[in-house]
Image (tube, rainbow, N blue to C red):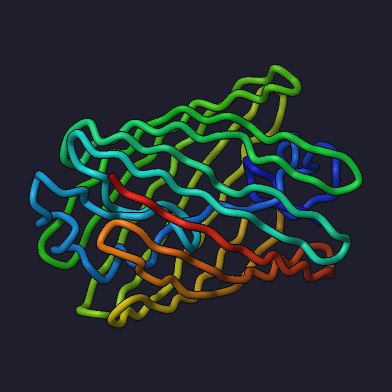
Length: 252
């Protein structure tokens, strides 16, 4: 079983029974790190990238790269049984201004019994801090399915609370693909940061009746680069499917 790139439901190869979208391995990823360092993100010098990765975890971060800066993120996902692997959440983010970015999401490529191609996304993020501890973001996106020619779109909302090294975040999203039912996903998690990295747990559910729980960690390579790894267990129809995730985030 795999995860639908549009509604995140675990599915087998073919069209997703929940929303009709083409399958992709991978799930929505976001950053628990942002919830612990709100002031650091929004207080970064304008000459430096505001490092606010959208991974790992469910949803998107509540930060942007900053005007004139770029972030590139992505990873790979592995489903052990039945065996499938592919890319997961490859996104380019361009800072237009503080609190505003443009985004281009590459289609996930899935290798199983055959090769599947996910959707392409073009969107933006609007983010803001609300006091020293709270931050929010909205992520609208236009979607195109290169295999079927279907068009769609969606919007995600994120909120984060930073309490020193401990953070909490929530996420909600709605997405629609042409000739398919709308899909809705809710989720969130908690994290704890330490020198050089951190650990997180997260979970979520969609209106189709599937859900997941999982966790992992991230490791800082520099002030503008990190690695992440984790595992989410998807539950649907009485089956549990682990999805192993490995990724990186780079800022320039």
